[in-house]
Amino acid sequence: MTDDAAAAPHGLGRNVANYGDRAFSLYLRRSFAKSMGYSQAMLDRPVVGIADTGSDFNNCHRTAPELVAAVKRGVLAAGGLPMAFPTVSLCEPFLTPTSMHYRNLMALDTEAMLSAQPMDAAVLVGGCDKTVPAQLMAAVSADVPSALLVVGPMLAQRFEGERLSACTDCRRYWARFRAGDVDAGRIAEVEGNLATTAGTCGVMGTASTMACLAATLGFMPLMAASAPAVHADRLRFAEEAGAQAVRLIRKPVKPSALVTPESVENALRVLLALGGSTNALVHLAAIAGRAGVPLDLHRLDHLSEETPVLVDLKPTGDGYMEDFHAAGGLRALLRELRDLLHLDCPDLDGRTLRERLDEGPAFADRAVIRPRAEPVSPVGGLVALFGTLAPDGAILKRSAATPALFETEARCVVFDGLEDLANRIDDDALDVTPQDILVLKNAGPLTPAGMPEAGYLPIPRKLARAGVKDMVRMSDCRMSGTAFGTIVLHIAPEAAAGGPLGLAETGDRVRLSVRDRRLDLLVDDDELARRRAKWAPPPVPRRGWDKLMREQVLQAPQGADLAFLRPEGR
Ligand code: FES
Ligand code: MG
Image 1: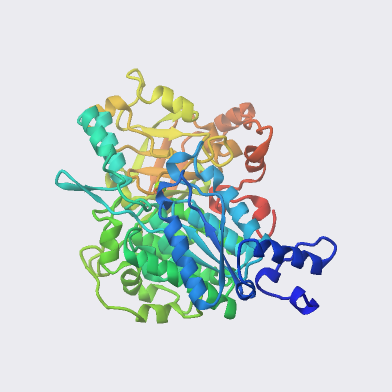
Image 2 (image 1 turned 45 degrees about the vertical axis):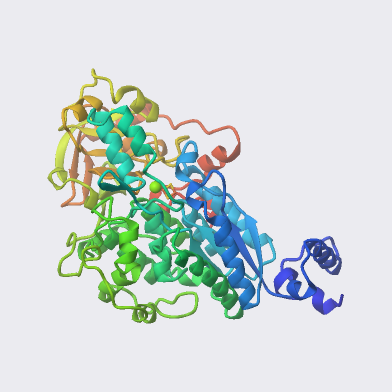
């Protein structure tokens, strides 16, 4: 082998392990690579790494093996050498305490493997809620040119004259079961019909919201955000992602170049127009934060006033992801928002958003993707709230909330944490009325609970049985992107960080004003000072990931990222 080959700047010659002798290191690597049966011609090709997130604990990613095979076809046909590698894979229902607790671990793992292994570009195969944010956070930090491929949404299932899909219908039926109007036999029937194909949840939950934001940012084709997991197009998008990665080797575009103040604002617009998941706000803040772009919640409020909800999908509307795709998908939506977008933002091929919107058929099904003149709602789906209960902000998904509850001042019933909630919420002796505000504290990112999707506090059983469908609920945790209700989330600072939420007690009065964007704890300063003198932060876990999270995790407005992974390393 020549010194020139040893110094090769691409393919397996990148990031050569150093045994104190670079040429020896490369010789060793090539001999090990040859043990896999590659020809020399293959080994001379540039390398596309494929982050394979197939896992038996991830039903959403069940198609990962065939997607990876299709990506490999695309890479090979374009002249690259595809090399798949495993990373952490996260699927919502299979992780304790919550998948969110491990998003940063997946981001750290993926970033390390993108940086450590010899690849010229990458295809990231993601999909389920936390996987796309983790992969984009990793891509921006490693800054290895990367195309994203999502697994795509599942299809809805026909069931006794209606359609079902994870997981808005899961919650709808469970609420009916709790209220006593669906029995155990029927809920078992429903359980077998909620998620019947591979793919991510079939509504505009976090997974599909993040897919739409990632495509808006330019990491994949617009229609790739919504093509069903089991449609043959999904495999064609996989092939194309492989070809895209090889184009990125010839003409590199760094992930950080796609995450700019303008592209992040476009993503926020899309989030609002989708009536998308509240979780996407935390994830977008984390992704943008990796590029040094702050996400300003006051700006969100401003954008929300002038960005209508145009997409009529569950959980805020009626349809499923397959309807959105058939209706023209993200491309049709973005065309409708055209005048509100920064159209010069580039994608991985350097094409502007303007150019991307000018391509493809003009079709749009207006029952699903509304025209601007007939929006689902004239204002955006999310608002940020500030006040004495949330000095650094909180979020409300108004498109999934009950307008009659938007201006509420009431007594609050406080739960100290998840255990307290589980122990008391269904107790018939619980002192609660439909007019009260339910408050959950100690469930934020700093707690062992890890900011779970527990913000959708159940209606106390005795009230649910009496027909109560919604109440004002608030917490420092999150809710599923597929959930609905008048639910204030992501209160910052969280209780465990010493935020005022930690001082709230049952019987206090709280005021929510969506009109004024306020969230206030109506307790006087002297009383709060007395309570604060008695407050103590929760103990730090002794070891492992929990300890690292506790010491490093930031609050929701900073994306709940780890401080040392942000560019400023705070
Ligand atoms: Fe994977 Fe909903 S559980 S997207
Ligand atoms: Mg979800």
